Image 1 (cartoon, rainbow, N blue to C red):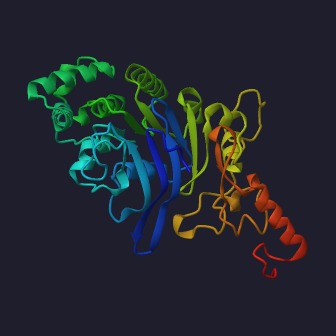
Image 2 (cartoon, one colour):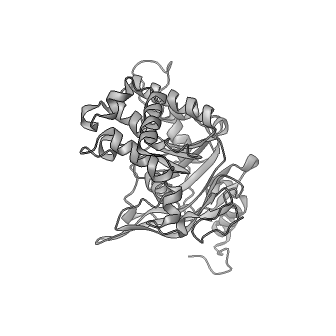
Length: 365
């Protein structure tokens, strides 16, 4: 289970999409925690549920999807939130709040903000930067329009936009991708959130702009002390900014731990496969890059047992393809979801293979 003393703790979160073809379990029992003031990077291939997990935190999952189970515990300032946490209590379950209610509106964009993956799709093309930035400020802060305007200019300066007064009057389609991303960051930081969720904020940007955006995040975090949940495919970025790493696969968390431990001693076969696929200098010419065989299964066609076992080189026949892997807590609160780290389960499987007797006492097949 995730640590309960963190800024955010997710317990058994399940977000499903109810389609004509069946139920898509995009997030299927996620457990994770985010400590205060730290950067937690969430990694995994496309389709592993990273973005849906982030959107589920703030109730931004669009129909036909919805959170069907689990808790998202947010540590408040003790003021209570719309009846879901009484005054004086320090945690509120965001998953239990009305996504359009006052309680969620007080938190979304104020205490928790999100920078989306595609700034061009997130900013309205028919409103100026000033319209969108000033509105975000006035929704949560008791400021006049003039005061909100001045605050907006200060935010644009903070994120490195030159001539912010001119940018305030611009429409998003008049700005570059990097400039739009900075505007999105300014909107997210408008109310000085305690947690910033950044969903692949550098994916569509050139390398130089990516480096500047990452440096900007690091500077802002150092100045404000906010926590950050950073979703990315780039393990190089993870190595640079992360304090902890969460590895997701097919809607589940397969490993969580400190960045040094994850990179130097990965425990889950999927984590090792991801790290082995990173190009490294010095391998020599004409050397093939390592890759993970197969593809992430479609959520409607989930394999039995461990979701990674069809692609795993270390899968145990008769065990990994039949048993849901347990989450094992290792040293320093590191967690891995794999049968290879559960000695009791492996011993019972070996006994079954040797005697033909199932662990529950029944006869083997």
